[in-house]
Image (cartoon, rainbow, N blue to C red; front, side):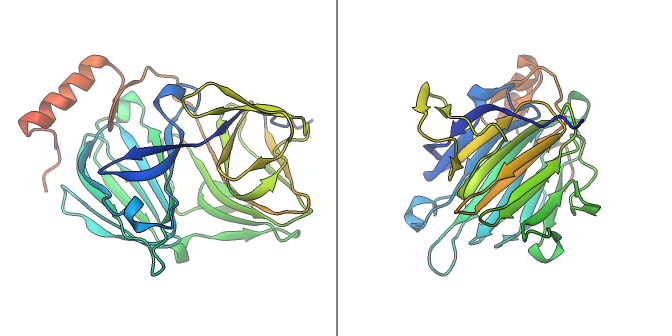
Length: 303
């Protein structure tokens, strides 16, 4: 019998400031290590007001992680110390492996109406790949396959595999599943996820039951104490479900449909030493990284 994943924890994203003054919602981050292993952070930077995001994320370093930027609406201009530059537009994904070190900037510009809708996920790298060669994978919307189910549910496959359809981002060490899922009203949705993998869903629009129990729950506001949500078993916009272990997720909608990110990956089960944009395994490695940054020897790759 297939083991269905139940809800382990429900969280609600929290408004915060990052970069040069970007207003965003942090879904999880430093205080949740190692709960989401191999994932470190998820930021939701949806906004209708350019003044809340236009200052962007000026030049800053990364080492030891991968940053995954998924844009739903608007443009993000990027450039780095290796000479790469370009624009992430609506429906595009940038999968950046910082590896041994990269210095880059990300400047959101919004769309014609001044809207900026997107997300950034940080994934950890294992110790043996912390100092690997940095690389970019820019994936355009047209190159990302969409699987449509008989009940009209739609799954955009960024990485991983759904019903024999593989996403364009492959050969990632943590074997991630990264999906953008839409389920119409009055539908059921089931998807196998490898046992032993960390799995979570983050709601973008609408609401749904995210397990068969349909019981009331409490949730945590990212970084804060518990808040009571006993009145409703629905998971709705800007809420996250972290699943228990199992082999399959079951999600059901009623009068309203739902859209969510479904993400899973193989845990690293390694120590985490994290400060700012750099994540290593030991405090000594962290100190080395920041010393090299100050001394101008941070970048190990020749341009």
